[in-house]
Length: 411
Ligand code: PLP
Image 1 (cartoon, rainbow, N blue to C red):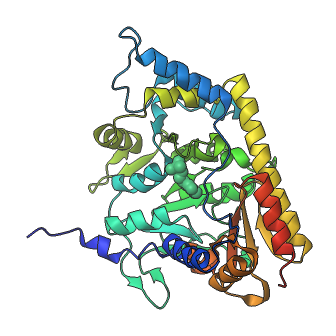
Image 2: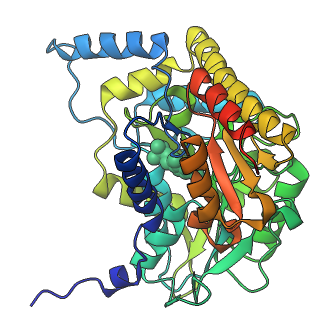
Image 3: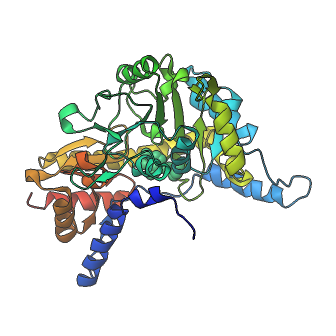
């Protein structure tokens, strides 16, 4: 008999996207001529930047020749990419990161999901609510969550940090001892951010309370405002308490190519059962080199090209394109009296559903009456009930059309 990992049975069905697909399919069957616009899932729609394409093409050519062929590369990533990351994403902001503190990977989803492996299964985790579901589910799989409560729709051992309009989507500090705190800024799904001073409160808290912040910064490239930190390491002392995750997915259209990186400062320490300090970077290095065999050479050359002069300009115009969509959605919805959040430093618009509708009723209304698919906020957690997420990743034409259709609804 093969015993399974019992923790997997505590996982709740991935209700959100399967339910969205089910309702969408039913609607299409009943309305075959409807032109549906999807502003639901967070995938990008623009092509890859030319600089990236050129770099990838020439990397492929290099692989054809025995003299320039590359096989297995360093699991942590090639030096050329790591140096470009350090120079452009950190040094330029006055942050010192060493080469052995950066780990290139095939996506932030894997990294934010896998990182928990190197911590005790007794660790108490805190997550924002609403939340990117990967943080929760990977801890459920590892056995940290406790039982799921069908009434509260929450796991009994997870500490939920509520983010609603009442606190301007800025969570309060945990009201009990936690070990690992997942923070996502700019936030998915709310599209909101913290200022430097607000993030400092979390760094100070982590230092005073011996906990670690897992800082997911997948949407960093979309930050527009000056007082929003691009890296948690801009905050003094963060090197002692934070791991940072960054992704090229949304920045450069890498959702299909796959490339991201994680920064694990050497200053970070955990403790073994005897109370001896252990360098967390060594553990992550061991985990990464054991279970991962590196991102392809071609992909890493593509990612490096993002940091060239041509690449930077192309990225800036991609970001501008999506953030213009965000402004069109924000302004359009606000003009008909909807309460909208986010969309200023992030490609997500989080809106309060009108007249106290629940998230799924609003989903149905939008689908049936405007033929638009969005994402019900409650799918990201209980604090998302009564909210709804639209993304700015569509084409300009579809974004404008969608806003026009919403304007014509009676809400
Ligand atoms: N983190 C957040 C908050 C996300 O929204 C996403 C993707 O939607 C990811 C991480 C995953 O990014 P990647 O494509 O690098 O796996």
